[in-house]
Image 1 (cartoon, rainbow, N blue to C red):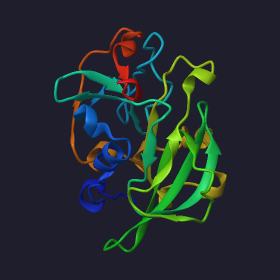
Image 2 (cartoon, rainbow, N blue to C red):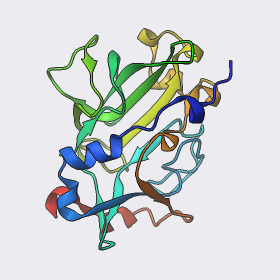
Image 3 (cartoon, one colour):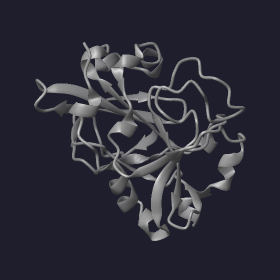
Length: 218
């Protein structure tokens, strides 16, 4: 089954919600910055020594941004994460930096198709439970602190979108399972995010991310 996400999925106000609830406007938030390897379907990595991924990236890593003065910042473990669209939490699973919440959404006007959004490397809000309905822009949790792991990565949010009808039952989903499914299952999150962004052409030195200031320390 083939579906066109660009035509079916509405634009999400995620970017503006993220900026508002984290008060990024106080430092003049302008746009996200993506290194090679952070975008969906990339085989590159953006951490360590920039080695190739074993499988293509199934989502979007969100961390870096610039402000109107071209100063460089990054999201950190204080960042509150809003949901992209109204939906129902249907699953929670482990990942190597924190936890992943899985939310089901219904696409009206297309035979009521459902798709899933995945919010990885976070610490979910303690009050949320599987089965809860969350409205667009409401907070799901905060970014997990990568410094507490042995990973070469820094704290960031990973978002994936996927058509539920092309996946195994949601209750059995893990990242190992998702790494093995066909990439046609996934939707590039950049196609639904509002606001501007820039994708850099060259991979940075693996320590370049330290030049981006934690926004909470600005």
